[in-house]
Length: 391
Image 1 (cartoon, rainbow, N blue to C red):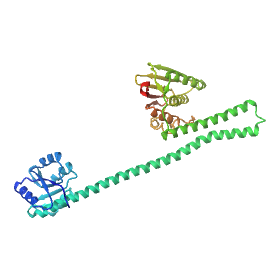
Image 2 (image 1 turned 90 degrees about the horizontal axis):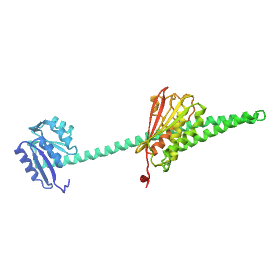
Image 3 (image 1 turned 180 degrees about the horizontal axis):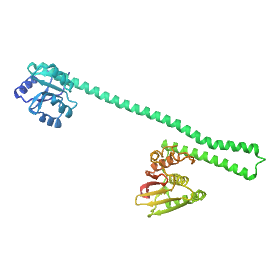
Image 4 (image 1 turned 45 degrees about the vertical axis):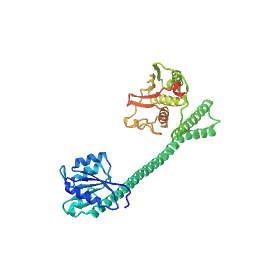
């Protein structure tokens, strides 16, 4: 092995005479240049390894502060990439094998050492250690790559399963309004002249409602798709937030009247002029309000509170409805997932998924507090975007 630099050796040997002899052997080297630092104790060696770099360690197994192969472990811990050649007074094959098992690269009996043997042992120890470290690096890289590929395959399988479930759920949810349209269209075709005007009007209303439900479902699926593909972006405009919320409450009043619900809106704190994405806000608040109304009992109360603070606003929507089981709460924001206690209450399971996508896009947070039979409170916290932040 041609070496164009000084090979730095750390000699750990408490016997000065033997240390000088090893130095003399190294001076006789013809093709290698060596520099040697000699210490008498293991503790001194560990201090050296913290402050300097070496190419190889020569280790005597009999030291004042360490005996036998016990010296190997702390040295390997402090310098795992450094080759170690063990020195001993006994020609013990079992000891030599055990030293190699514990991490040494070679084993020398002191009385058998000469210049050539010492230099050859040091050279081979360095080369073997380099090969071992190279193989270890390659193995680590392969392990990381295998883990990455495994994770990719798992992700592909999850995506494939999700797509399958997505198509199945979408087909199921579209089939219901299609069946309604098909059934009523058949009735109108076969009995048009026999049906009274009021009945015809009712049938057409059902058809329009079914079409509206399908269109809403397709819109929601399209929205989820755009969000997952990174095509959901904020478009900030000046907006009077309190007036915006009051308008949403007015639009929801028709639905609340059908269930004899009371919808209360309150605003707390002063709202400075700020910029908001009206579309994303509408998706968030409309879905939460509709859910609160949908899952509330007749005659109940829905409370919608807008809380303004210095840097954030909090939208809090509280109902007195059926509540959400704890085991379902962490899964509610997954597309098509619905709580286990909704029974026959209609819904696609996309509303809360859309809410979560919008909240994330706006850099906000959403939380749930719910008790079965008591009600549910959703709280959405959004940062306030002011004019100077956009300019």
